[in-house]
Amino acid sequence: MTKREEKEKQAQVALKQLIAQVDKDPYNPEAYYQLGMALTEMKSYPQAEELFKKALNVFEGQADKQALLHYGLGNVFYASEFYPEALKEFQAVKDSKLANEALLMLAQTNYAQKQYQSCVAFALTVFEQDATNTTALKLVADSLMALGSFAEAKQYYQKFLKLSPANVEVLFSLGLVKLVLGEDAKGLFTKVKQSDAKYYAKMQTRLQEVEAFIKKTQPKDKAGD
Image 1: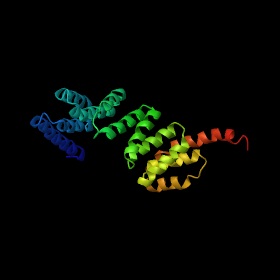
Image 2: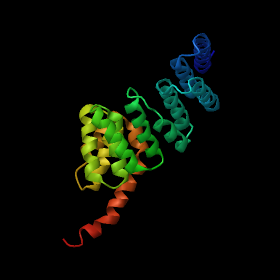
Image 3: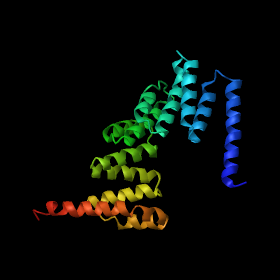
Image 4: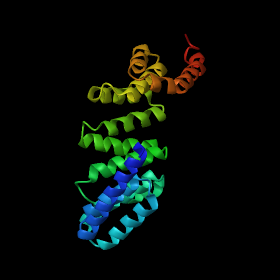
């Protein structure tokens, strides 16, 4: 048996156990959530969607129990790239315990739709509640970079690196931002190359695009020199 077949077999066993848990305790929203997320992990999106919708009907009128199921269904839609539907589900989460998780997914869904201003608003709200949330910080920085707010993006990438200094994606993005701002970025790119040569090689096209952008804008910047 190959590793892949072994993994699939283990997943099927786990799935049967989760189904049995739902059958054993059909009025426990957590049981539906665990099963739904397992189906999502397996990319069985239609089955996961059907399960969560069925569960929402089971707990109709019980907003506290439906919150987790709306969140789960939102994740199914997000994973299957049905972003407007995902937004609707995350907005339906009315539970203070899940509030930050739902806001973070709202930020990620808006980022996936290139709605960068909305992404910044949601991600900043998460960061205000949890100053160690690196996912929120990266979403803010990436969105600001996409909006062309390079100086602000730099600040948030630097905040991220104080919490997670070895993240090659953020090190590389900070390098790009510094290049655009006319600052020295060689040290950052060297660090990325030493840490993950494959990632560095993969990102060369992006680096060349930024360098081309800088060359294109430089004459205008230096016209008055």
